[in-house]
Image (cartoon, rainbow, N blue to C red; front, side, top):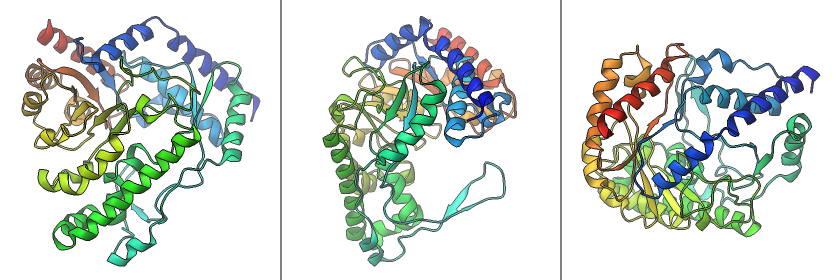
Length: 406
């Protein structure tokens, strides 16, 4: 580590701590606790993405990979703070554990497009029915030496300034733990949709294997005391009166003390009945282990909300840009938090049109007025290199909230 690299990180850390220690962080914590516990608050704004790679502040100076990751985190958070949404900035830096087991035993090849930031195509490894026999049952095991090495590098640079949180929770969570994502990578969406008709029993067997593998790794992590209060997952601010607050290095907690999260993006075009049969029934045993759960990302859940009521600890439902916000609001009512996600393209992606933003937000927030609503700006791929665009969007969104809610 070069002296200049260390100096840059220490300066960024001090600036980040200044943000974390401002009084409004506790005000926001109280708002999110009440909101996620179904107590009425104003709609809260959460900017989850803002085309970071287009921002001048995203340029990194360090050379050491582990320290570049921390530098990126700090620069990202400092820029995020300037957007003035309702996000909470926590006074620690998280270092993810290194694992001895990830994936399902296949190294699927990805073919990327030539366009920067473009898509990729996967060579799906499960081609024949017999390929299921080659799947590896996962386990939870941390590479302690590799984890310690990474932590030591960061500790040498900034460990005396800010707590370093080692996230030891299992690799099989979030996208690696919702079944849907890895089913898409292993088999392919178009293929498993055909399997529902052509070989339903085989597909049930595959979904059951993924469910059992995720449960096994998560149980092993719980037995090992590796779940911690930094492992909450709800695609928002993970506060609620029913659960302990996020905290660094508080391990040995049960999943019943944490937020859990799943989605069904790969099942967007699957009928409600088949979604329930081939995915939700396999997700339910995993979700039940958590204290509270959030569900939904970019998929349209308009016709599936009734089925989501089977999740006994469900608290948050994502209403994506592809969903019918009014119909979702009618079904969700005040029973759950409605996480409204307007289209990032319409909001900030192509030009910046305040009238368009006003029109869309006014329509949808008026329809959601009787719900516990928050607003998430996510999946922002471009702001056409305009550093101020998301900041202005937050201001307009607050104005619309004032108009609708008074």
